[in-house]
Length: 172
Image (cartoon, rainbow, N blue to C red; front, side, top):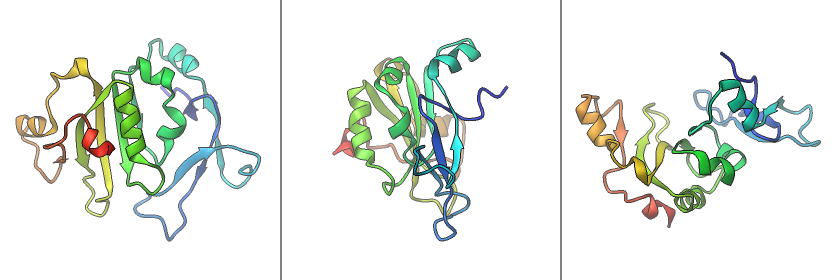
């Protein structure tokens, strides 16, 4: 079922498509707050408050996926962070936002970095995916343990988390 033809949040956003010089396999588009200046220039995406989305689903959200350049800046509020047990985050390099600032913020919210993997498309080496969990989920397998246990080829799951401790090295 479709929850909403928009975003879960308190404010509408606009979708800004990549220019032909930026576009790489459909990547490089992004969202930003809708303002009077953006009206008519980009597609406006309606917003549904988190409480309404949870009411429609019939449950509270405890996992969030952030999958676009900079959307974590507009989406992860302290209130939402308090109710989550896991955050999955696609990081498209640092051209759109300061990832280190977010590493520090996630650690302050009580999360620790559990997985960090490189994107599996050969031409998107700058994209990483991270999984952040609360300390009470420390029994989850590491990326390398999971890959080994399920016999997943290294080319399919490119683990980068072998030497990380809580993400604090990345937050510096």
